[in-house]
Length: 383
Image (cartoon, rainbow, N blue to C red; front, side):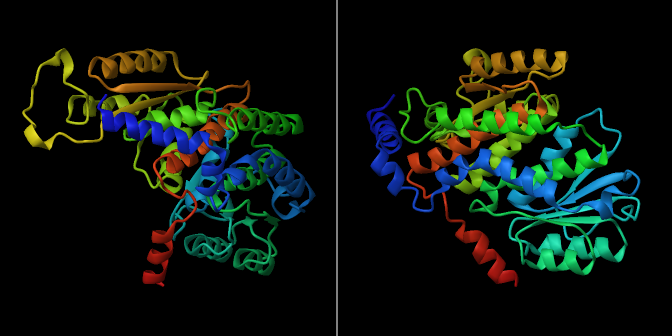
């Protein structure tokens, strides 16, 4: 390690372990927002249970559940999909666009999710669902344009109190969808299962709390491992693949940092080839197969594997060999294992650690995790 690298590492660690520096580097309180996750689960479960869902649950089970939403709100549909799993006879389709697919009709349930209740794309698709006479549920901020649209359509609306940014309100937005699917009989989620997920979120939050030093704090350790690296993040199941995508988007927003998500086995058919490119430590066998000269990147690749206990046996073999191939090429590897018996618990264990780590990475490299100014600038230019 070069001296300047050592100094940078010390500075990054000091930013994370000095509580005064840490708090001043997070003026928007994103860490506090992440810490609210367990409370979000409990509040959202209670609010959804108190909402009259009669207009949608009194009818026959829908052919498909279409969840429309963008960004931090849109991921709620992905959460519902992995919680329902392969065993569900009702397909869950997520949509991140302005238009509904042509096949969506009155036989399908459309759930429009928007933390602000004013997301442009979501309002377009919600209006289209109403025009097609699709059963619809709105999920988002009370008094918002989406709430008004649902009221006019006489559709149920589940109000959500934002924890801050939409990306920090994942559980407040996702749990209502799980409650709806449970009421429809699409998935069986006992009330104690939601509570177990909340307890798991609290467990991880305690381990990753700001006043816990980096040498015992798994989220701070992970952030320091990724600082100055290009993360390639692979999940070993659909559930872990969702966590990998979440990891990448949280790195984008919280740390303003690039990342490449993937899921096994698909990543073994394309992304793995990057192991033999210029971002690897060295080619296999230490033989220079390409003369990159001055084109070698200053940011090395780092492989992150998110492991799920429900991965396919052949995926387990692929995961093990992938790690071997990476390490043989001088690529750093970090493996994180999901914890818990249910899909919801396992997802909670991964995502809570990820959310903390991405905020810590931003702080470690001197980036305020809160602002997303370029998104606002983009919206102004297209308005």
